[in-house]
Every structure is written in C-alpha cells, then in structure tokens.
Image (tube, rainbow, N blue to C red):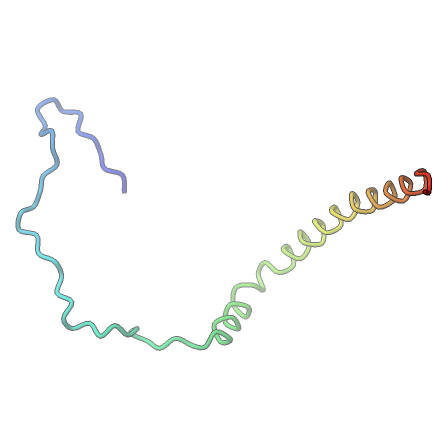
Amino acid sequence: MKPTINTNNNARKFPFVECNYQASNLEDLTGRCTTLSNSFRDISRDYFDNEENKDFLSNAAIFFALIASAQIPIAASATEMIHLVRTLPLY
C-alpha cells in the first residue's frame, strides 16, 4: 500500500517510529509445510480438471488463428525464394 503524504503544515516531517517493536518468535517453526502437497501430476490434473476447461475453446481458437496467420508470410516467402532461385543464373 502506498503511504499517504501529510499535507498539514503542522504535521511531523518524519514518520513515527515504534521503539517497542519486537520480532516474532520463530522457535516453534519446523520448516515443513502445514499440509503435504500432492505430486506434480496430481497438481496438474487438478488444474486441468477445474480451471482449464473454462478457457480451453477460446485458447484453442486463438492458437489456431495465430498459427494460420503465421503460415501466410511463410508460404509467401517460400514462393519468393523459389522464384529467386529460378531467376539466378546457374554457374
């Protein structure tokens, strides 16, 4: 969150510093996750079962539109390369 700027002329110039701050106690942490995670295969299966089905058709349509639009310049450059090779003299 962005800090707000005091526009009051009588306001302090520096932010208030809390002198009684104490760091949190980390003695009871074990370094392990609270719940064991599933395997990577289970995580990806859950993603594709729950979330990907909503967007699959629109993503597939966009993908095929991009592939089709990329094929036009590739085909045009291939025909121009063939034309260039035919016009060059053979040595």
